[in-house]
Amino acid sequence: MQEKDTRSEPSERLEVAYTDKPVSGWGGLVAMVPSAEDYRLRLAGLRAHNRWLAEWCAALPGRRAGIGQVLLNDVDEAIRDVEWIAAHGLTGGILLPGMPPGCGIDPLHSPIYDPVWRACEENGVVLNVHGGSGSPFDGFFPATLALFALEAAFYAHRPLWALVLSGAFDRFPTLKMVLAEAGSSWVPTTLQAMDNIQAKQEQGNIGVLNIPEPLKLRMKPSEYWRTNCWLGASFMTRGDAEDRRAVGVDRIMWGSDFPHEEGTYPHTRESLAHTFAGVDHDEVAAMVGLNAATVYGFDLDLLRPIADRIGPSVDDVEAGLETIPADTTSFAFGPRSVGAA
Image (cartoon, rainbow, N blue to C red; front, top):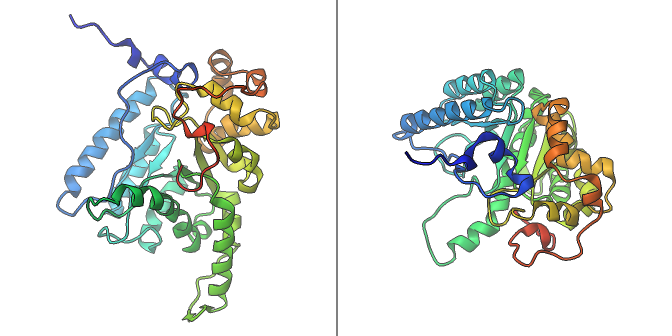
């Protein structure tokens, strides 16, 4: 008989971010918009993935917030998937597909998706956007990867202003949106830019662009950030932590980005100490756990004994880090970066 690989057992896979044991078998990231010809096959594949994910999360009730995938080619089918995801315990919500310009369907700011946002709001389903999604692909050329790395942040952030400036959060005020692995340094300047643009367009013109019927919002765009939006902040740097209040302490959800090379593994504990030493304990607790519990509905009473057993202590984090691990490839130990990472 072939020996069973116990590294994929639920309890050990879940604790890897804190114990830094190697595991295998993790999947991909974001579904892109399929062509009309491929849509039915792609939809069947994503639904199979969602069924598997629901079973995997059910193996450890309350400890996994699975994020189901949807496609937006067909609004009615997307609503069915949202309702299925909610009914089958995928408390992480849905992962929006990558939708670059010219992808063949309406952009996210189109009112056609209002029934999807309504279904998410009514079912308590969170919208998630992942960094690296939504970028156009023009083929491989010598500068392709450099351009992708430079532009990935812009396209990963685009869903934020698409939903805010289109009034989606006015129509669905309890809808939640998370931007994951999309950096944080961009947030203050982007919110300011959105406020400026919105104020001008509500006056009827943006420079030489006349807007005869401006779309008015109930609040400034930056205010929706405080009520409806959060960051899945992967491999936070010391600089990210120092500038946390410009983003909003209650908006930040720390992440390890396991198992990617730029993530904190196998030095997660060291990265937490490096990033958060000297930071107010209540603020650290919010960023590394409590905010995520609020967004995704984790039961803290259930999780606290587990965190006490496998997580780093307050004293461990407060002690800081004298020497950065020589073998690390994580962005968490470097200077604060501007962009997607």
